Amino acid sequence: MDLYRIRGGSRLDGEVEVRGAKNSALPVLIAALLVEEGVTTIRNVPDLKDIHTCLKVLEHLGVKVDFDLDSSTVLLDAGRLNSFEAPYELMQQMRASFMVMGPLLGRLGKAKISLPGGCAIGLRPVDLHRRAFEAMGAGITDESGYMMAEASPLRGTTIFFDRPSHTGTENVIMGAVLAEGTTTIVNAACDPEVEDLANALNAAGAAISGAGGTEMTIEGVTSLRPLDHSVMPDRLETATFLIAGAITGGRVTVRGIRPADLELVLSKLAEMGVEITSSSDTITASLAERPRAVSVVTYPYPGFPTDLQASIMALACLADGTSVIREAVFEDRFLHVAELARLGAEIRTVGDEATVIGVEVLSGASVMASDIRAGAGLVLACLAARGESVVNRVYHIDRGHERLEDRLRLLGADIVRENK
Ligand code: EPU
Image (cartoon, rainbow, N blue to C red; front, side, top):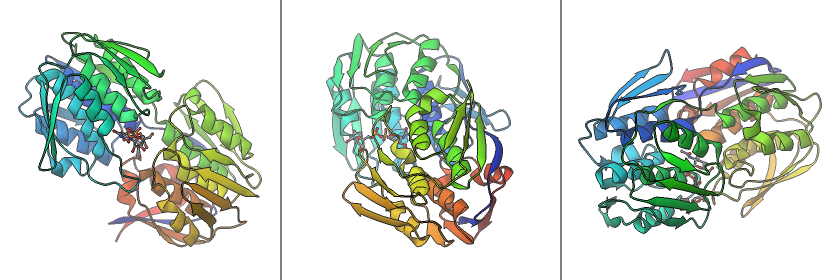
């Protein structure tokens, strides 16, 4: 199992380019299922464990897949689907595969999807996805851990989401593209990745309007041309690098990004004293002094991303003052708190709220990543901690970051990957 050995204290300085966004690449690759004829081309696809799992699911369904790692381009031919089943072995590796439900129902009128199991960040039910497809006319039953769905065909209707669901919105969009009639999603997720998916589909002949807002409309069409799309840059990884610069008292510029996707995050970092400058496709973050305390509530986009909660907590651990961080998206996303405490952080949690009493120094220790984002937060804390740290279970981090250590090293970090 791989681990990171990190000697903290080096000031990170320099420029780094982010990869394509995992959470945009996944639905866009899955959308290839909707194309009956021709080869879909998806560029700027990050080389990540989750992407390979997603491609395995697509291959299992009969899609011909060719991932050219040198050009970060994936070619997909979904002309001959020979299955409508997403099996347990693949689903248990990545719950985002549940998004094949929409395109399979839209294109084949049936789907058999293993129910996603538990997850380190909360229960993460799929009831909103299910109710949406039922509202669109699908008959859904449960059988031996699988959800069996049939629709002949899916029909457009108005879907009211109780709360915005990121992949729920994407799943329904993909189901609605080839459905009969018009689908309206009320209380849709507004994330930039949802908009990226809609743009990719619209360029291939879909008729989606309002993506990026809380209400969107999808007019069903009879077929799509092959998609040809370049995945948007990863806003979460961008923020991780910016915080890496700040937490080490350095200066990091991230290139090839869209500052508008990170407005609230940048404003929180600025509140903490981080100096931020941006151009149309770069952001630079630097911090010369101890960070200031902050108050953060995670919330669906454009709120503060739950996926950056652990990273901003790492910075808050070293703040001059007491920060309050509330996790309002997932019910159990504080597993990194006990690990940060091993580095000397002072954090108390009550329910969904963490009170972080800033300390002057963190000290190296062995810690364990529990999911991608908790892992990234721990790496950040270890970069700032005095002495040597070990981050175990790096496979979690690899699900969402392409060789994170190589790029941190280019910025001056003392971090190596070891296999133990
Ligand atoms: N929820 C329900 N029922 C549903 C769906 C969601 O109750 O049917 C709840 C969830 O339990 C959660 C909230 O609604 O409390 C929001 O969940 P959402 O559906 O938005 O999350 P998701 O679509 O499963 C995506 C990202 C996550 C990210 C969340 C929140 C992908 C592949 N995953 O998950 O990313 O944390 O949105 O922004 O896009 C990650 O990349 O590390 C990651 C976990």
